[in-house]
Structure formats: C-alpha cells, structure tokens
Image (cartoon, rainbow, N blue to C red; front, side, top):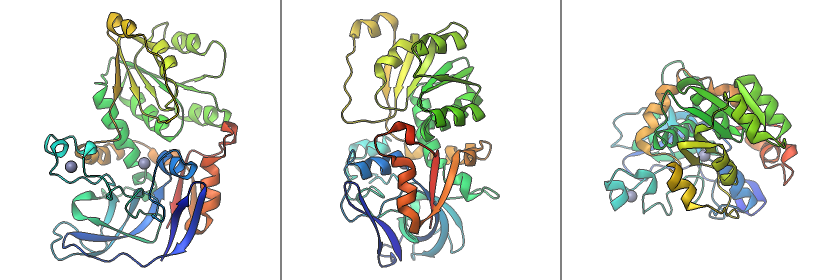
Length: 340
Ligand SMILES: [Zn+2]
Ligand SMILES: [Zn+2]
C-alpha cells in the first residue's frame, strides 16, 4: 500500500509499505477512508514536535473494518469505525487513576508519531480503541470527532457552564470546534483571530469575531461581550497567555491548548491569587470522553470545517495548505482531510 512517511524535518514521502497484518488476537485492520491533518502533523513536519523517522503519519481517522483477530468481539468486516488514536496501557499509575491521556507507557504507541498511523490505505488497532460510527453519520463529519474530544476534555477541565462567556483566541480547526461547541452550550462566545482567511471563515459560523490584529482588540472583544471580561478564555495558539490574562474575568480561567515549544510568558502570581484566576492545561483528551464526542457530533455540523479533501498522492499540496511556511497570511484552508 502507499503511505505518507515522515522522513525528517520538512521531508515527507509517499512510499510503498506492506499492508498491516493481525498480530494480536484483539487486532482490527481498518481500511482507512479519511484522516484529518492535525496541528500535531503540521508541527511534526515543521520540526516542532518529535516523531520517529520512517513512521506513517496520521491519526484523526475513520474507515471500514477489513479484518478482525480471533478475540475481537464487537466488530466485523464492513463496520464503519472511528479511531481513538490515544492508546494507553491501562496498567501504569496514571491509567489506574483514570488519567488515560497521561499514560506513562506511550512510547511506541502514539499513532502517527511513533507507531504507524493512518495516512495509508490500511491501519491496525487494538479493538478497544475503535468505535462504531452512529448510523447516518458521514465520514466527513466523523473525521473531526477526535478534535472535538480534545475540546470536550478541556471544556470539562475548565468546568464550562451555561452562564459562562467564552473568548477563544485563534480560529484554526481547534478554535473553530471550540467555537461551535461553546456557541451551543455557553452564554456568549467571542472569537479573536488576525488572519483574514480565518476571520472570514469564522464569521460564517460564529456570532462574534474580533480582528485580534487591531490595536484595540482586547477592548473590542470585551465591548462585544457587553463590557464584561470572560469567564473562560481559550488560547488555541500556544503563544497568547499574556493576552488571555488581559481577557479573563475575576474568578475565571484560562485554558491552554495550542503548543509552541519556544514560547515563554511572564506571570504575576499575585494577579492570579488576588483575582481567583486559574490557568489550566488539560492535555489532549481522556479516552473516557471519546464516546460522548461521537454522540455530540450527531448534532454539531463539524463537516462544515472541512475545506479540503485531498488524495494521498497529493500530500505535498495538502501539507502546503496548512504548513504554509512561516507566513501566517498564507492560510487558505481550515480542516484539510487526506482521502486514503
Ligand atoms: Zn490530532
Ligand atoms: Zn498507562
């Protein structure tokens, strides 16, 4: 089969690989339909996130069961499935505490990072990390469930409530999933974004979108929120903690989701102590929340975030659309999906 291989920083290749085989009794081979390109894939490509050279990239994935091992009970060939790509060992201290996304034994099991991923025609997973797609849910929607699981996990960590107003910094795919979700469950949602393509895109889906490149962006966002600061501020860029702290209200919290290894911020602890502000890092998602994300996707138009569906062969074009070099203005895509 053909697969997109990570060859080193800024180097990908389409190579021939053997189709994965069943080696454990609970293995399921999935014929991959499509896989979203994630910020993680982008960061691997750009050298901001470590991955094993030679690995097949890709993890936000949906497909059809092709073959099952002898111990598999819940799936049969032909079932439409969604992949939960955050494997865990179930035995370490963190797994035992239910903090599955912080499993100590992730090395070698991170799909599309150090274990072969899904930018390929087939991939293999333990049964426990697959879910059936609800009847009628299109692949184009289901392929965005994994980012939704990340958002749900972080919203839960923030204790997001119906009476909260939410500011989201960064209208990339994660920011937009946050926007759709917060607009559904919270009081008011305001997006801050500076890229013209993303501003225009966000305005089609969200009620309040502020150009964060403008001088008075913080004041404009607060004014758009009825003059109030925000109970929940989400930084999906990974470089906006200071700005987040300007936006957050007393008693509120800042949720950090984006990552940028080079970013550091200065914090005045007294501001946090005196105003009851929490800064939260909740990681990607806990596997326990994955079924809820699938359920919720039944009523969230996640497919509206998919702007491009591109074949494996055209991987350079696909990564070009989201990697875009260093020029932020080059963004011309929201969620780009690779069709296997
Ligand atoms: Zn991802
Ligand atoms: Zn573990």
